[in-house]
Image 1 (tube, rainbow, N blue to C red):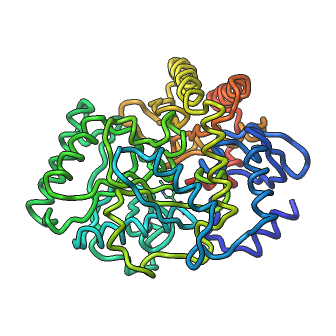
Image 2: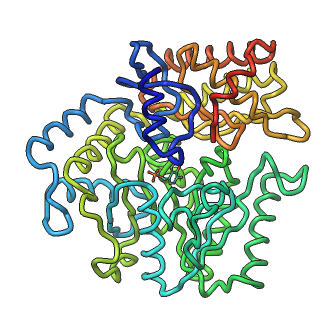
Image 3: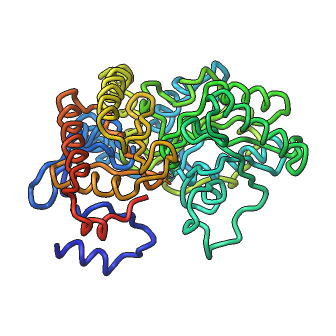
Length: 443
Ligand SMILES: Cc1ncc(COP(=O)(O)O)c(C=O)c1O
């Protein structure tokens, strides 16, 4: 297609991870349409950024109303109602009973940079601990926190100093075969204790920044015990526990924030993606005293927290509440897990099915014992699903990413699952040609 060729010629290849040649024209709810008028059910929600669905009428109305009044007068200099209205909502839905404060940005990445700054200022300590195979974004701070992909870091260094990575507990691919989830948790905690005794003095650590479910690593759900033990460790050493909710927040897991599934109260949450249903907005919401030492202009952006994005954010929260999307995500998520577990009985290449709410991963393997990632299966199944009218992608080379808009109906979801099943069957029978692999780069 001419448009695709033209974009390829004009844009930097460093900003595109192609799955199939789709040129999108419009979207409504959980369905998008391409330039030729073909419809697709969307299981990707624009990388988890449109939990209320594409162009939700309430969100569109809020954007339109605000755009007619004022698009931007930088909140850095002026006070305005939309900022206060959204902040009021954010401090009320963020976990924990303590007083909270908020700062805004434009994307998940810059929010992570802000969280690093806040933690260093609040504790007077330089070190930040993050997790191997985490993805936190593309600014220098966020890249430094991340540890998932060599092309992210190769040739662009040096990265931010004083950031350390420790293992994240992965119950499906444990460090030692046969470990139970709690043993995996204990193993990872032990690695942190060893690091604290040997190379990372605990009293120099400002914060752990952790995804409640490790998203781009392939939707790794940690054991509850790990989060509890990490919280206890943080309390013992005066370290902040910061939950990085950019992908798992805003109802994705059936709770407002992913960390609420683990019964642990964080000191701060990092928000992005779905917060404003697709408009560029991010935020950090933290215990009030953690922000009190932050002196301007330590973290501000001209257009961050602009009134149009804030109104979209407020409407997003309203839609999630009014339409019961948290409950819907939990109920539908259970149904989806059940259907994939049925498929797992038939297809040996489905190694694991996991997730919470509508944040579900289906891990494809060449062999259930070795758990070797099946990139070919993931690529071919996603490509064939696209040809059949479904937007599906994968993480970490092998994990089908099931993160639809939370407004998706049971009927749409069942149709999407039927398409995946048909595509799996065609893959099993060798009916998807190798030629599709040239197009799918994937993540
Ligand atoms: C967990 C997580 N953190 C941060 C980011 C970065 O967000 P953004 O691309 O909006 O900067 C992402 C994006 O995929 C993410 O999944």
